Amino acid sequence: MTASQTLAIIPARGGSKRIPGKNIRPFAGVPMIVHSIRAAQDAGCFDQIIVSTDDEQIADVAHKHGASVPFIRPPELADDHAGTQEVIVHAIHWAISQGWQLGSVCCLYATAPFVRADDLRTGQKILEESHQHFVFSAATFDYSPYRGFIRAGDGVEMLFPEHFPTRSQDLPLVLHDAGQFYWGTQNAWLESNILFSRLATPLILPRHLVIDIDTLEDWHQAELMWQLQKQQGLIV
Image (cartoon, rainbow, N blue to C red):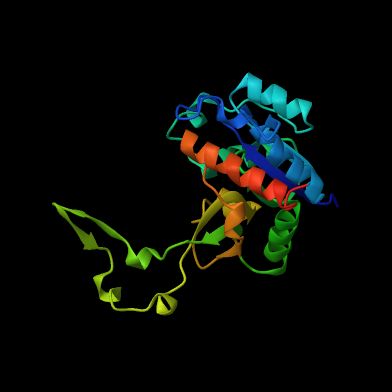
């Protein structure tokens, strides 16, 4: 019987509009995607590390740094409306067509420079020892959304006015997606199960490792975070 393989899939579309060339733009001395590739390699838990891309430059960088790019993502999965789960399902179907027997599958984002090999291994362990469909990286909000409000005319309106008198320490703990990685069983991905549900376990990361890089302002903030953690010896 063929042993099942553990697969890392790094989605990396070309054509980013807000940050041109985001996935291969230099960050801390190497193309951004290389941080994710190296973390997957250092984790030592993946039999295959695949980059799913539609872009030849991204493919060249991925190959150069030891990842595999065995196919070019089809155009219908490379526009602004393509969802991550669709991209992962496409890669899994490709792997199955090659005769691979898959075990757990990890979606690892290309723009996660603070992702750690230890966290990837821990996520896999939680998935394999539980009956959950997914394990994903998460973090706590730095300020409770229960205190949030929106503009209403010239004033504001609380989203949860019933919590106006509630002490902050008594408010429910709220988590958000850390945007680093998502472990899932093959069937959970293929069945397009809802990622955030009672069948998904969050692996809570410290806030200093979490940033969503969507704009140039985010990028510059991430660079400052990197420099500070480098100075403090938190990053080797």
